[in-house]
Length: 285
Image (cartoon, rainbow, N blue to C red):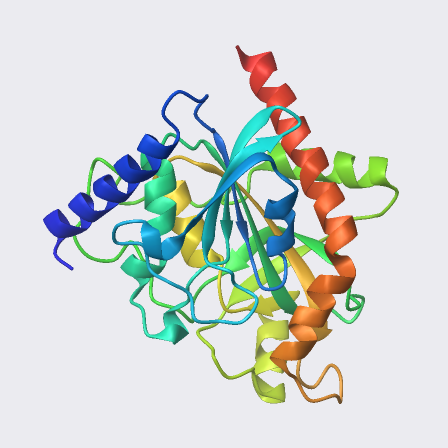
């Protein structure tokens, strides 16, 4: 898609969602809910679900566990917007299309984004069911969605990634988890293209590069969000141990089942985080 056409597509999708919000307080916080984690959106107050297919130019997901809805609502009175699922490059989309929903969120005025995913654990100290806060990422194995002509309306040509994941939001996440009675793990997330799971040799390579968890999403979204000046927080649900770390064969059904097991703790954490972010925003006024 040419740059002018892409900018027009983002603007039209943002305008479409903006009309839905007319008369309501605009959300400043958004969440992207990964594989098996979309149920949180159903807990929103005053919620309205809009299928991706009903939004102009929005790509539609074909992956089980990704419902494909934009859900508008409130958490404890705080307006939020949730993407109930996402699309991936392995579904046949280019990275501009994969990250179009994040561009739309930025055009709507979102200033903070919580991205979640299901990931394979590489760190031997991790267990299925752990929640890992993303400290940093490695994205050498996927194309950069910022490649190509730069649109100054979105951000600078060379955005800084020294703090891709906000230190302030990470501290808030640790506080929330502590209040809920569990310890949030922390580590480096590496993004690969998929859709095949990694081989044991590839996992050993990623381990040597400093990766704690591996998945097939999130990093392109964060790169685009940071390009637009949006603060990001990333949380991975460790659904399984990666190939070679465990002798069990990998299966997407396992990913969905792990999401189901952790949904209560995960939802409680997101509820607490939304409240914490709301208080921080109030303190800034």
